[in-house]
Length: 263
Image 1 (cartoon, rainbow, N blue to C red):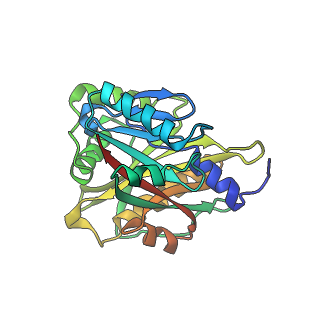
Image 2 (image 1 turned 90 degrees about the horizontal axis):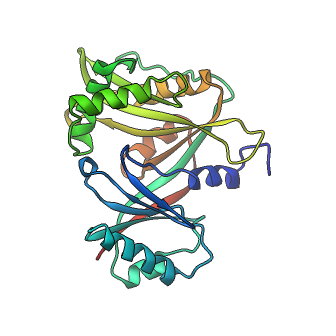
Image 3 (image 1 turned 120 degrees about the horizontal axis):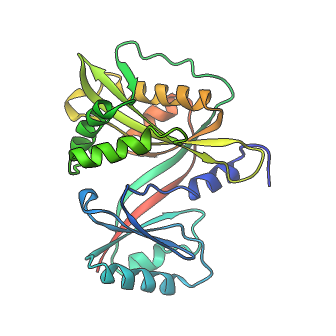
């Protein structure tokens, strides 16, 4: 155990976190298999690799379950802390590397001093705000928009008294242009407090380059600090957000890779 955010502890916190869409179905043993809902493309993803089995055994079991769920692909996230490392087995089966993210973190021992004067950012506090966030996400992530029932369900969960989640939306000329979320989670070891997991940040393609991404980042850091979080953790795409995050004081601790295997 440790009482400081050293690199191994940050990587442990990152390994403990994988994004799961609402309404997803999860099977957890020594690994985690998740079937995403139809609105999020229905993909099957393997995460949480912490197994004593061989790479071949782990992958065979995951493939069997993916086929049982009638999926024709299997996605697999691999990091330096994955056990076992499935990279060789995936490549031998013809898997394709589709995404790489940097594990980035910033301690929250003081409030953020960044400013984002050109953009108005609001925390989601009602269904209308969540609808604005969904408008952005539908375009950025190429997913189905939420109907009124799903909006109401998600709003109830988000705004519940003890919710660990927060959402923010950035506006330019009163129109929603970027959205993002955060979730507060326990640190991997006692004495470290709370981790703010920053996720889902995206800006409409025709509104990029105007400070909206940085604005939703700053607002989430403020929320996290006010909630008592001691570390902000994010997995940023190497080709896009990682550069912005480094400029905002985040340090790189490693990377995670996403492979897609056709079944």
